Image 1: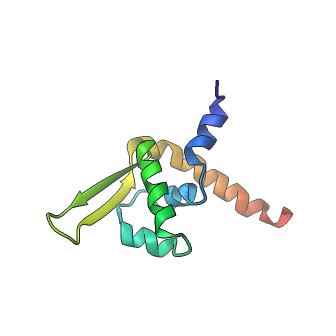
Image 2: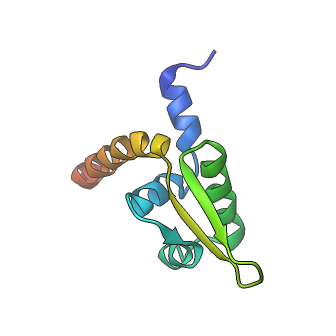
Length: 101
């Protein structure tokens, strides 16, 4: 049986997941915008982590268009909006205490 904190960590475990949530925040972003922000991420890893966030229900993906190039956009789901403030607080805590490492 997982504890609540285990469930939280399993949900955002991944090099870019928390960063993606913070970056998307209350905006709708195209895949190309996310890719530019995380240029150091391989396309395979970035797509995988976006799919996992979508599967967890934290982000929503919308694809529009009938022929390539299709327009793919991501935004936080209502469920994702409940997690984003927690992740941001972790980010701020890390910034404040980074000098201790």
